[in-house]
Image (cartoon, rainbow, N blue to C red; front, side, top):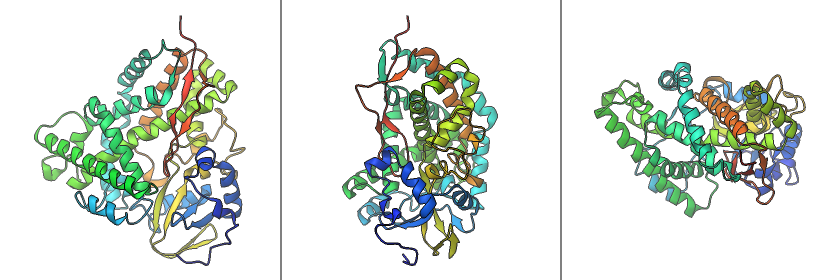
Length: 418
């Protein structure tokens, strides 16, 4: 990497380490300094150019000619040789909507526009509500529990399983493989762990390949059937490789991000008693409260982009081939875009302008589903769990991932309903 933009080791950029415990817990004070002093900087540790300001992130998102989305989920351009040897058992490249540029992006997105239409999403509300109530029925008499493990993981997990058409009984296995996929693409774990995750990634790939082949022989009314390529007798303008990769991404994105939204959003409410009281008394505040949750604690820390030609961004010179890490969680706290950005305000007028769902052509195809799941979840949890509060005897635990922000455990307590 070129050195003209490098600064001495005591520069604020040298403090950037998103896997450090204190930055997993609360990275925002450092982000404030970075936006002010080094808005775009090179991180030797990650071999990435990090983009921290709202305007610069938006520019990267919208300019697909200078910033390619190929490899948008991969922290490193090339995996470790041991990992690469295992991945050779599968497809040579991960081809999905998130990791595509025009014109391929428009072709793939058309499939999802039909599969995740507003009408289709709205029609899911009764089944999502029934699933959420069923989960709460399982622990409502306990008086305490773990929101993530007992609810926030299961609800979106079941919903995406139903949408795809995979058995709910496979959810735990798929979750494990999805974690492998996330860990592998972040490329920050020890090599032995990355090797183990590579095996899980290949297993997930084979799982969806077999299901798509089964749907080609016997179609169903589910999203997997809508992904079956024309070459396999289906209707989707996708290759088999693209269909499999998109199915994997749909499962991962369909539950990971919503789990983080539910956990992070509830944590914000329980840390803000007045805001919690307002939402409980007036559920019509929930839609905007959810947008503020997405702004304040975005489920995705950021995505990666590749520079297609020498360019400048935020005062830094980026060479062709460089990889960037666009930090949504920093952009969402940019004081030039949001007034008092560190304050959680469920009535914030411009909360919906957050970056959590991305910008431009890559705006999240599942945004409407995530919003619906979150609205139903918070509405029912606040209705059915009186005096909901954080437990003081057991700490909340955040997930140690480079790309994802959220909780692994969120211990809560409530008064058992009479």
